[in-house]
Structure formats: structure tokens, C-alpha cells
Image 1 (tube, rainbow, N blue to C red):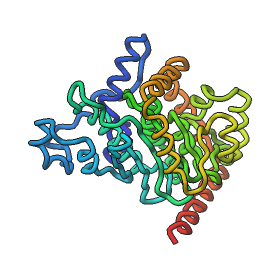
Image 2: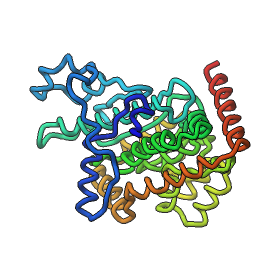
Image 3: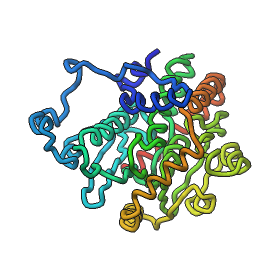
Image 4: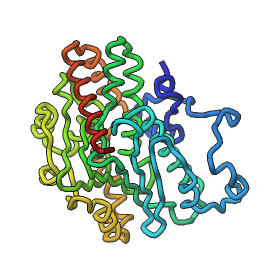
Length: 349
């Protein structure tokens, strides 16, 4: 089953993963990613706002910030700050602040556009941006993780393929961010609200994590008899001791920003409401050292390499475990969905 059918037409991150696949092949490893499906015939492709600028694009004269300003992505808002050379990506899910199919489609399209921006830059020119920041516009929430309603529906229907397809799309997005899209940039996760499950995994995939005091992060999956399968083991195993990793995953407890800073999982603790300013100050302090920092983060990834195949294997274990959940476990999951809906309604009110 093609995950595009589950996600309503979303496509894998084509050129990026083709590049990663070639790199893995040179290293004698296999990157089991969908091949070829990301190409779409021009006649089938939905026009974007930039189509009107074809003449300028052909001449290579469209500034990067104008290209970004014209981009529209599902449940994702973007802007490029020229002065600080920073690309800001704001998750803006229309429903629950979790990884809905719509948000995944928007993130995939946005990630492809980053690669396109660098590819369109004239040879020898400055890069379109040097820093990438991901944040959320939902009050009090960075991201609550996987789409629990989708999980419960697929499990009740016995649809293993559909659940696997959704999970595969999630790890493609988070792995691309972990690999910095193959670009010479520094990625920053700005956590201004709770980051649970897949939301915490997404933050951990960044080079730098900035979290505001009062935020909570953790892996509550054990509460409904499951485990976090979209990056938690892979990222934590490379960042904290094994005993700490097991406690974080098996206890299901939530950690505050100060605790995570002490563990080395949060780099900067900001005051409530000051997260954006803390990111801007970090970039201002370090812009002249960007080359060194980008290289250091790349060296760290090389020293502790993460193969995509590892994430695929773990996510398939997660799917197998999820399909074994019983009625009581699913009722707990659905109660969490109801709690998320109440929280969202309160935030909107």
C-alpha cells in the first residue's frame, strides 16, 4: 500500500532521499525508501503561486525571500528573515496540534522546497539561509505527537498497512530534519509548549533545542501500552546514557525544560514568551561561527551515524505492537484524544 493513498496524495521527499540513498549505497548500506513516486508530471502538478514568476525564475532573478513569501503549505507557515539568514517554519495544524496527515503533507512539501531553494541559488553565491527554526503557533503546545484518532481507527479496522504507511511518512519527515536536508544549515527546535511523543522526537531531531520554562516534554505512550517508535530510541541512544533513555521511555513521565537542560537534551532555557527572542539572540551570537557550528553538527552525526533503515525497523516494531492493542488500550487512547480536543477548545476560547 502506497502511503500517498493514506495521506491524501502526499509524496516522499524526492531529491533529498535520492541523495541520501546514493550516499547510503556508496557506504554499502540500503536506504529502503520509495523510489520514483515523488516525480509528478507537469500536467498533474497543482500550480503554485510562483508559477506566475516563471520568466523571472528562468532567469534566476527571484530572491529567495520572495520565493519563500510566495510559498503556501498545508498547515505550515513559513518566512525567510534575510537579515538573520533564518528560515522560520511554524506548524499550524487546523485540528489537534499533532502530526495530522495534513501537517505531514505540508512538512513534506516545505522540506522539498528547502532543497529547491539551495539548488536554485547561483553558483558561488551566498546560501539562501543558514539557520532553520521549527516552532508551533498553538498556545501551550509544540506538538502532541502522533494522530491518536488515526491510530485507533486503523487498529480497530485491522489496517496494518495504513498504520505502517502513516508511521513511515512520520519518520521520513523527522529523518530528513535530522540529516539537515543535506544542506549546510543549523536546525533549531523552538519548544514554547508541551512536546509529547512524536512532538518530542521532532524536537530531538534538531541540532539545537530552545525550550521555554514551563514546557513539558516526554513519552506518554506507555500509558496506553505502547512505546514511542518514530525516533525516540534512535535519538536518545545517541544523546543520553542507556539507563536515562530507558527511564524516559518506560516511565511515561514528563520532564520540564530545566530537567532536560541538565540532561543535555535542551541547549537553551528561555523565559516564558521569550523563546523567539532567545533564538534570535543565539543566532546573533553565533552567525560569525556558523561555518564551524554547521561542520561540528555534521561531524557529530558522522560520529554517531543514524541510518534510515534503523528507523524503519523500529517503526515496523511499533506497528506490530500497535496492532496488538486491546479494547482497553484503545479506550485509553481515545480518552487522550478527547482530552486533546478539550485542551484545544479551551485554547481557542
